[in-house]
Length: 379
Image (cartoon, rainbow, N blue to C red; front, top):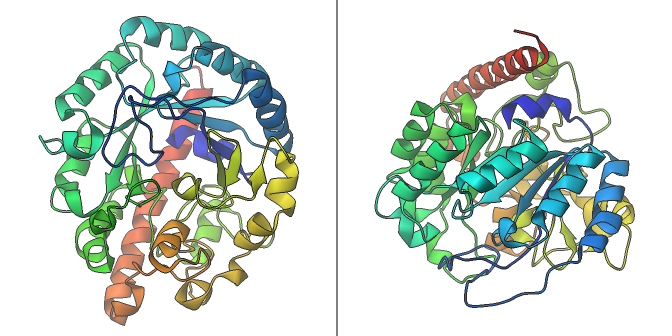
């Protein structure tokens, strides 16, 4: 996804669209509650085009990440993708990999081209991966090999929680060895009750955060993101005079940069609470009204409404805290992020992390721009 980041500087530039809850896996802790033992109704193709695609393009959305369930199980997935591509959208597909045989990969490449981004989930490269992902790490590696044959882009999604705190560093190192970008996804109880698997402030500080901030390949999606706003402005030549959150590129909490639509049409600021918090439903209301006029979206994109340390922090504009963790751990989406450890740091520790974040962010921006130049050149 790195080479697309600098092409998208509008509000709500990215749509995470859960187009189905149907799946051929039954992961114990599935965020969407999908299961191969259940059958769910899908939004009709016509509704997707008229109520999602067309208004999304009009408001400036340029990237759609299709997810599920397993999106490729929809009988009309080719029609959906073809339509989105014809309209001008860049496309990503989040998949468990089981449907990505060589025939399907060729078909997808013929439609989308080499710009297609396929996101695969991996929580650890050991036998424990099957416990949370319902598939073996070896199966994921085989899927990566198949995708590489077609020269398509790959992004790795790593869900983080107590179950992989000890192996996370090794997982990221393995991803780096394959020269792949990745993003972290906090484990939450969206459709399960396993609160004991969520990470806490101590685990974030000691296990996850030190790894995340060291590599530019995972630079876009973690908090606390300790990048001073004036440094962001000087590096990217953008500021926060119009929007209170970073757009070019998006870092820290992505709320305001992207939005999610769940399989029933509910529009949420983040897919991780798409069944709990909604600004409205696209079947009943227009997408533009939901994103720009609903009380939820108007309030959550104004970071002056954040409470506690998240509303009064030097990094509010570049970080924002994790609204998902705030919601699930306090019951208030506007509350401070209880997993943030910033106030537990000494001034020297904070400065060291800030300097490390600045260095990684500079590398991220530099490499992203290089990729854009190479992409647009004839070399």
